[in-house]
Structure formats: structure tokens, C-alpha cells
Amino acid sequence: MHGVFDGVVDEPWRLPSPVSQDDLSNWKERANRVKDAFVTAYLAYEQNAYPHDELLPGTNGHADRLNGWGATTVDGIDTMVLMGLHEMSNKTVQHVAQLTFDRDQSVQFFETVIRYLGGFLSAYALTKNPVFLARADDLGRKLLPAFNTPSGLPTFGVNPLTGQTRSGWMGNVAILSEMGSCQMEYRYLAHLTGRPEYVRVVDHVTEHMRQHEERGGLFPTTYDLNSGDAKGNSYSVGSLADSAYEYLIKLWLMTDRTESKYLDMYLKSTEAIMNDLLYLSPARQLLFVTDAYRNNMAPTKDFQHLSCFIAGVFALGAVTIPNVDPRHAWVAEGLAHTCWITYADSQTGLGPERVMFRNGGTKWVDEVTAWERAGKVGGVPPGVNQTAPIHEGEDMEYTPSDHRYLLRPETIESFYILWRTTGDSKWRDRGWAMFDAIETHTKTANAYASISNVYNIPTKKENDMPSWFFAETLKYAYLLFTDEDLIPLNQWVFNTEAHPFPIFRWSEWETKHLDIH
Image 1: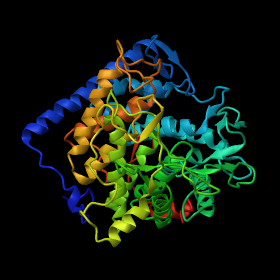
Image 2: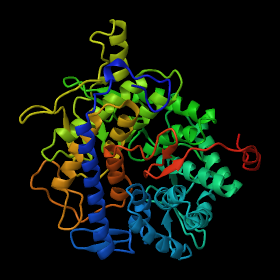
Image 3: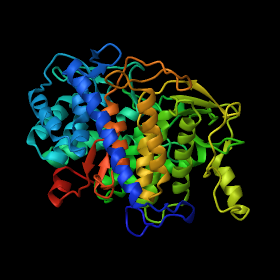
Image 4: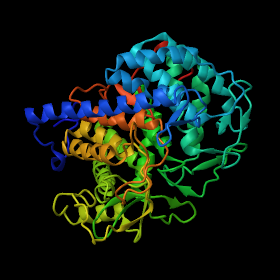
């Protein structure tokens, strides 16, 4: 089977399984189950917490951790549209139209960009309602003072009314994931508005990253806001880093693969990730990505749920990059499988926030090189396997270090991308098992909640239902199960909060006016 882009053929060991008509009707029903979950959870939020940011499902209270602008509503608009919940999405227009950003408050730059700015832009792209674009432009300008630092890197917090900035919990630094995850939003906003300042500030940040590549393509996790010098003591694709790597290939894809500088940066970074951050567990041969200390490259042996997004990123590269190294497809398959195993190994069928691979394993690149030199015995690369879930009393090879499941989307996100790029139905099957576990173990009386321990049944519910549950987890589940390809990956690109932006090309006047080079 071909991937989503013509001319790219999947490897023989990942040919899709045939799908019967009975299966198709079954998937339609499963997609409807996800839609029902969204409606149930959103109505609970609307009745008990709106217009605040999030519902506290255990007490039917509310939280305003994301500016108090109705984060669940804004994060969920495009999901409503894609699910055909038009009556629900139409109600959001009044909320967005009445939003103002002139309160004297400090907001987190990164969270505001990916959730609110991204949510407005995606809602506009899907509905063409000018209210969403007007609000996006308004917010985009209000957040620009975040870049008013000596280095030009964005600060942690900014006051949309006064323009005053503030440092965050890590001090006077820019965090890699935060400074590297505003480019898609601002560049698409520039395309819609023609404002050159939107491109200028974010392209400066990307160029700063390019000038600070280390070990062939890795980036330290923090940078001094004054000097711009690297400060972080580790490399990671998890917390503090994740979406900065994701945006490199997506910036290339978003402008229809016309800006090769982003592809070059992506290929360097993925080569470095494969060489330095991927490891294999000794017995189960589980492929995992871990952090490494910057001074000696020793692995921390830590594997985060947050890192599971990278399997989908490698899968995108495997089908979009001409003549790409086949290892990209192997990494996508192997990492997604390990993410699945952390779910399947648990009593609830849900994956923990963090695990620690006790042995640390061996470098994946060394194992692959040895396998290739030995004649590719068995035909399947190391780490690209079908390791079975463990039975009681067997060794998982990892120790959970954070037992919580926070309704996170990263694993089902990668399953969705792998399904759409390979056609292999096992990703749908595994995604359904995950959603079924969410239904069984996170559902409250009227909503859903994070749980404190994926290894204990009955589960203890946390008083928390993040807005990403609506923006990402339920959206990716729905897109995975619905038969219609609602967001074709050769026409749309998702930001890190799962808000889809359409692929476009800069016009000649835009290239000159916005100084695209």
C-alpha cells in the first residue's frame, strides 16, 4: 500500500491488513462512541465550569490555569467542527467574539500560542468565519512583546495589556519546546494577514536554533534570554524539548515543502536522535527514546509519555521526504510499539506518565548496524518487533516512575499518523483498546478525569480534565476511527495542540513583503 503521498511504498514488513465491510461499519460505530464522549464531557464543562478554562470533574468546580479565557471551549472548537457538532461549535462564535485581551494579567506565552492562537487559526481555516481570524490577529499582536528580549527569544510570560514580560519557573531562560513551537502559528497568521512582524520574530528564533545545533542536530533544553547562549544540561525529545523537533518537519510541510532549510534542520536532528537518544532494552528488545546528559551523553534511561509523539513525526518523514533513510520508518514503528506496550502492560490498559528502563539497554544505532552487517537476519530490524504484553510476574524491564495517566494524547496521536501513512489496521485496533480503557477507567459521573495510578483497579480519579483532552486525545481518536479522511495529511498539518492548519505556498508578493528566504 502507498502512503499518503504518491510514490512512497511501505516496507514489506508493514503491509496493511485487509479491511472487511463489517470492520468498516464497526469503525463508524466506534467513531460515534468517541463523539459521544466528547459531547458528554463538554456538556459537563459547559454546565459546571464555562466560561472558565477547565472543569474540575471531581467537584464540578472550575480552574483558570490558562488565562481564564475559556481554554476548553477554544481548544475544542475545531474538534466540534470535525465531528459535525455544528450547533455546539456555532455557540462558540459568541464566546470568541466577546473575548478581549486587555486585562492586566500575565499569561504563559507558549500555552497561549498553541491553545488559543492555534485554536482560533484552525477554527478559521475550517469554518472561514472572520471572527476567528480577527481574534487570532488581535491575540498575535498582543503577544509580540514576548520577543522583546536581548536575544530575541520569547520569554515565559507576557502581559497582553501592558507588554510587560516575566520569567518563568526556570528563571531567565527560554525553554526549547516553548521557543521552538510558535513558528507554525505565527507564519500561518502572517499568511492570512500580511503582517511581516509575525514572520520576522519567529524566523529569528529558528535561525538561533540553527546556529546552536550540537552533536549534529540536537538542541540544549534552555537558553539564556540575555546572551542567547545554551544553558540546559541535557538533550531530550520529551519535557522541555518535544515540539521544537516536531515543528521542523511541519514547517517544511506547511509551506508545501518549498523551504528546504527546515527539512535540512529536521534531517540533522533526526539523525542525531537516532544516533544518540535511541536505545533497546536487552530482553524484550523495546525501542525507546531517552534524555542524555549534555556533558557526556550518558542516557538517563527515562522514557516519557510526552515523547511518544515522536513516533508520528518519524512516520510523517518516512512518507514525505524523498529517498529518506528507511530507518525513519523503523523508528516510527518501533517507538509506537513501545508506547503501546506501556499501555498494554498495565492493569488498566493505560500508559503511565514516565517509566525508567533499569538496565538502560544498548544504543539502537549500534544494534541496527550489526544487524545490517550480518545480512539482515530475519528481515526485521532490531526494535521493530511485536513484543507481547507481559503476564503477571514477568519482568517489564522498566519501572514506572510516575504512575499517572493524565488523559494525554501523544500515543494515540502517533497511532493516527501511522494508520494514515501505512494503512496498517493494528494501529486502529490498539487505539480502540486505549479509548476503551479511557472509557472504563477515567470516566466520572458526568465527565472524565486523570487517574493517579494506571496499575491499580479501581482507579483513583484526580480532580482534573485538561483542555488537551478535547483538543487532542478525543480528536485523534475520532480521526483514527472514522472512515472518512477528514484531515488529509497531504493537505493539512497539525500544530502541537492538534489544531490543523492548511498547507499553502507563499505567493511572490508574500515572499518579498514578508522577507521569506
